Length: 224
Picture 1 (cartoon, rainbow, N blue to C red):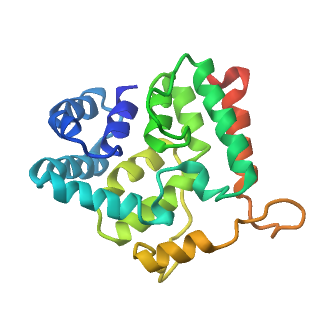
Picture 2: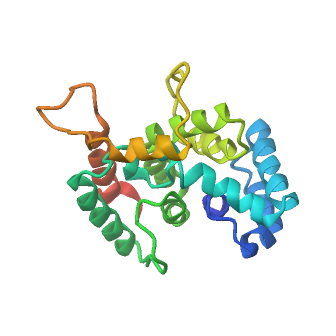
């Protein structure tokens, strides 16, 4: 599905080459017809913002959002594993999944980097891609809500992904504190990793969800 490749490009660091490819990204989004209506309009608005802005300003906004805010991290397992040991094993399993699909991580990037994951989805048939995307929709939906609260056009790709996953997110938490200041970022990284298992809060299902996601993607009927 070209749509997932287009969304992967939009969520990657905005290098000059990506900006130059914006017309092709737009053609892919329009041509495949998977995303329509208001969701497509909002995506096109992001394309306009990226294309019309000064490249350095565009890059600074990207870094301020995704590199300085743990709650907006583009690394999927950051939101369920944090710095726990389980994250390493989940990375290994996801990298193996890519290799089994014939994909090679050609650059120094972690396997759970969302644009890489979307590249993987682009190699699946539509039904398999949707099922696999649904396994991480609970991670994507809160990011979309946080970006929308900040008035960022980057909320559009996440909204489109949540819609494609047919996921109905719970209401956003009221008065969520922004965490994009250096001080807040420091506090977030100093927090102890969440403990999962019998001794943890039973309401915390992050680790089990991630394990389910990997298990489903490795199942014979996953479409890889």
